[in-house]
Length: 364
Length: 160
Image (tube, rainbow over all chains, first blue to last red; front, side, top):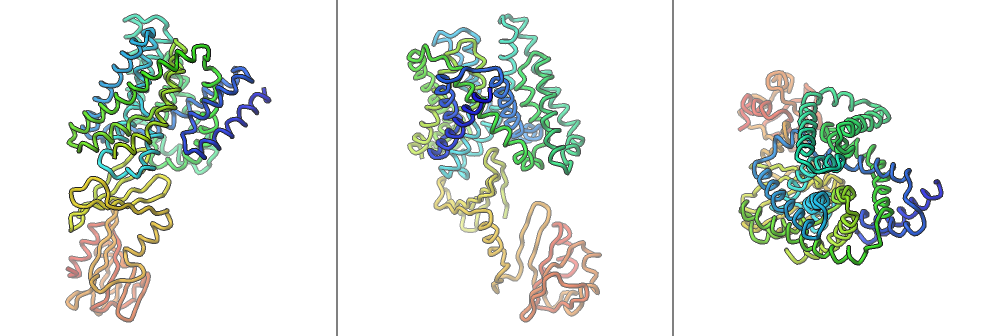
């Protein structure tokens, strides 16, 4: 066991080094490392467990970007833009999935994969291209953060349905009720418990702080699992509930190292699980996924931009900014009953990470 | 002058305002501490220039801009408005009740809530002046307080 872990971690080290050198997202490099490791070691239960921890910590920090206050204080423009983005890209992904001959469940997941763009990868490109101050950036980052909330809800529903197995109206309705209940409960608890949470988190000891935050995360993850939702959803809502503003720096310092470590194992485990037997078929299908991923967001950016009276070029830039997909899409794809969805998603995430900077240069 | 403040999740905070010439100055404070200053010409959407600064450089530049090292003559009064606190540079005119008396005699903090944190004159430069420091007409005081307190200070001591 230790031998396998040592191989994985050494590969991750080299991968991170390479990603840093190439200025690429380490996510894609880690997945490739996993695919290469597949030839040497099997996927084990221990790796699976560490990976799950990684997924939870990842979604926890995504949830932290978000708070009930932000939902309340966001302008109507942002809600409209977010809704448009979802209404265009979710159905597009679902239709594409069905068109590629996937089962209904996998097609639904494909919708989420195509819809959610990566806030972190996008933010890096925006910073690199010095577009932080441009008018469309406010929309791009806000839409992207809201997407995570909508995707979490969507994921909860889809995962609940996968869990239940059969896709019937009754079961679907029950999952929907549970998800909305969990979300409403989290929202309500967040508002009510905020002063208490704030005091508990303000403890001077780093150790107390760390254990409180992780315990809180686990309690909500366990609660979500007990409700038949996915544990990662619980983790996301844990991040959503905790007051982030004043503790952002502390969380970053204390939690991020654990997240980075376990998330790296999470991505490697995807590579280890990848089905390579149908590689050519998957590669071919990915072309359509990539095209839909690019054009869907370009169209979205254009529609939102025109509606919000941005200039032509700002509208295009908004679309381009929304193109990169990332970890959330991969987590979703991992839940699909058809294994090729994961393959297509990984290839798409990789391709888009390479394509986005080229498009950003093209659309000035 | 109105400063617009927007949070950019994943990036940091954005502050922007329009200058008298109609240019838009936009400051991005990244989560990493990096600062960027964008300058947009009137009605332009892409920046004319971008300045990038590290946290330390930005603080140093900020100190220079608010006149820590050198106060030009035009600077009779100046304002620095933060979210709740404001700092103002105010020149004391001869008719002000402040002129010729000590801080204590005017009961500055008691009456207005504002605090004098520094005092500059043609021949003096006093940081954190003690209550028995005498103020003279022509001196510049640096006052800190909540906006209402500084406003009260200006009204009470005729510093307009």
